[in-house]
Length: 277
Image 1: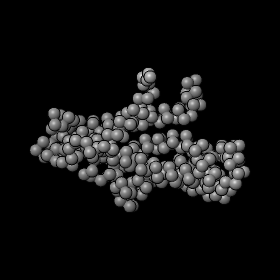
Image 2 (image 1 turned 60 degrees about the vertical axis):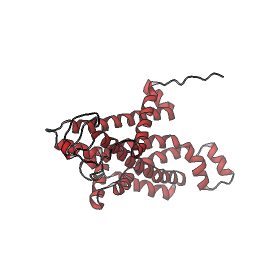
Image 3 (image 1 turned 120 degrees about the vertical axis):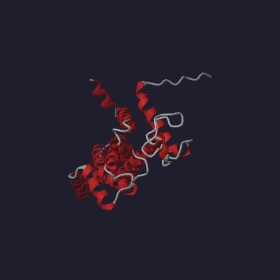
Image 4 (image 1 turned 180 degrees about the vertical axis):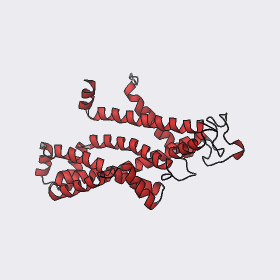
């Protein structure tokens, strides 16, 4: 029995890097890494060494370890907010698109009201009122992205609700809830999954921006935004303290965006054909 060798293509690279990034982030607490909060004030601003590959920060903490845990915190907030927004927004979009009438009117007008507020300003206002930290940041960012999921789900439901397979299930006596959960939801999963991946990428940027302003993850917990803010304050003494978190954030956003593009092309072949023209 012969086995076919696994061939990797260029289009698989974003997914490989994303899986590696998520795996390291999930396993960070059990990996043989130093405590990201462990300080060594005698080695402030120390350069790279065998024990500290990227050097040490203003408190003598290992920069590489703090980058790993900062990425972990960013992805944790991003995935949690995206999942919450996806569940609420998709449910609202399916209900509005399938029920139509007054339900659709109220749901879509609510979404229009939320969209009137710029996402970053809405998040800043809520975090300022209720205090910073992941417990506040996750639901606030979820509310910001609920309209996106609702609109995607609503538009997708409108295109499939009158299809023959939906009418067949309905004619068999299935309840509205069963039709929405077992027939409509699986057939609109593609656009929703693409929206989820895009939301994760944007949420990482918003979380980093809020943390940079002191409205996100609270110190001493590591965060890319906090590390960028600290590096900016110590730029003249140790410029690499600013370079490393900026490179990490840029690389993570590039990987997430490339993965979003590839996922969209695979789930919707029409988009790849349009891009290839």
